Each structure stands twice: as structure tokens, then as C-alpha cells.
Amino acid sequence: MKSKSELRRQIKKKLAALGINQPYVSEDLLTNLRNFQELWAVRTLAGFLALGHEPDLRPLFQDWLGDGRCLLLPRYDSTAGCYELAAVTDLERDTVRGHYGILEPAPQLSKVILSGHVPAAWLVPGLAFSPDGARLGRGAGYYDRLLAPSSGLKIGVCLDCQLLAEIPVQKHDVKMQHIITETRIMKCQQKAEELAR
Image 1 (cartoon, rainbow, N blue to C red):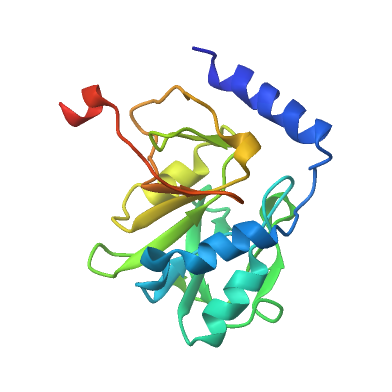
Image 2: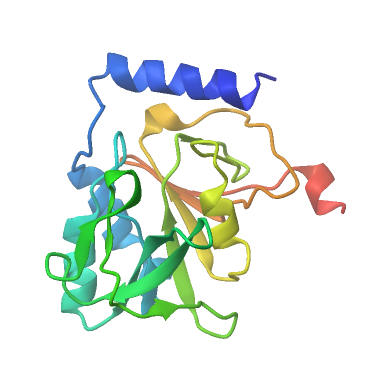
């Protein structure tokens, strides 16, 4: 199996060859998210604002907010050196350019901790995902630390070209329960050895 760093290079090269180097809107991906009933069964969504090759999900978030639902977005806490969540009610008014130049909730918005008893879903970016729910991130571990305490539904969001047969997994890596692309809604299948643990 290739190392995570090799896989990152491979996926970045593939995305560059397809001309995907900035956030993009995929109507088919948005349609699959809108049609995914398990997502709409909750009223709290932890999403992300796109950077680089990631899908722009703002049209979905506008629908979510328009329906009176709670939208949480990640914000970098420079003191703690990690990401936290904050609720936004208006994507334009409530966001500013933050760490890495990513749009994030403004500093004055209160931090939100997603406890286990709040039914919530996460839309999670990644360089690649595999059918067993493994995620290949950028390598800093920010998302794994953000996701670790949450019991909410975790949904990887990417294009078909970012699906890999296998991704090496470390103990701290958080797996997805579903992966949604422009052509499919996948329920992740755990490997037999994981089920035996």
C-alpha cells in the first residue's frame, strides 16, 4: 500500500490534470446531498467552507439556513492550535478570512461544542476517501481532532476521481459512515478485521 504522502501527491496531480485547483460548484454533488435523507433527518450540520480543490457547498448551506436549521463551521483557535466550531446564520455577514486564508466564523461568534446527545451530521472535506470510510486529509490532523469527540453522522464529500481502493489508517484517524460524490451515495463498509475488534 502506498504511503499517505505518496497518495497525497498522486491525488493532487490528478486534480491538477483535471484543472481542479480552486473551489468548484458541482450541481450533481449538491443534488446528491439534497437527496440524502439521513442528512436532513438532523437539524444541526457541521460543514466547511471550501479551500483549494474542495467543493463549494454554500448553495446547500443557504438551503439549510433558509430552513431554520443550525449550521456550524470550523474556526481556527490560534491559542489552542486547533479548530473549533461556531454557529453562523448568514454566510456573508458571519464569516471572515482566517487561518490559511479560509473563510471561517467571525471571532465574536460563540464557540459550540457538539456533545454526543445533539443529533448532528458532519460534511467532511478530504483529498481522498476509500470505501471503508478512511479519509486522506492534508496531513496536519486538524479534522481528526475536531471530529474525534463527536458521535454525529460523518459524511465524506468529494468527486469520484478522489475515491481510492485503500488508504492507510492510523489509530487517531476518524472514519466516515458515508461518502457522497457527484455520482453516488456510498455507505462505508468496514473491513472484517475492524469488525472483529
